Image 1 (cartoon, helix red, strand yellow):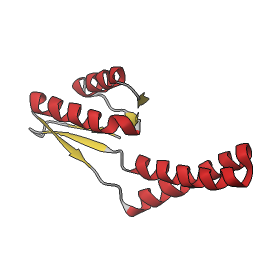
Image 2 (tube, one colour):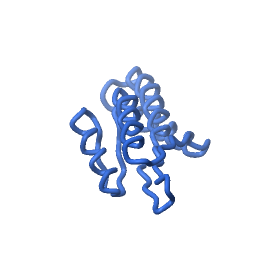
Image 3 (tube, one colour):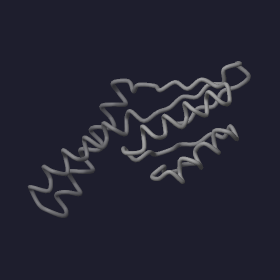
Image 4 (tube, one colour):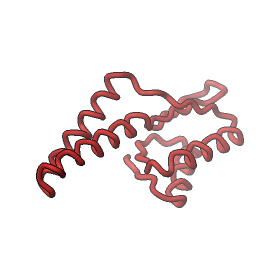
Length: 118
């Protein structure tokens, strides 16, 4: 299941997912990343689980950045011509780079099981 986390209400849904030990893919707004990580840390302390933020490997980083640049460039070209192409490539690459960093790995502290949220 894929869910977007764009507001504080969505953060509560994410925490409910974690409490239920469900698997899912969560897409975070850049402004919400710090809030989500703080809430996950608080939940981890309460529920005795460990939270590990995983850095992307070079392949994932390159793929997301290039994909973002291509999509942004095409959209910019379609809507605003050559200047839109340039702006779209820059914004798309920045968005792809940011998206490549949003992977949170949650592992139960006592080793009974594993929950991965990507």
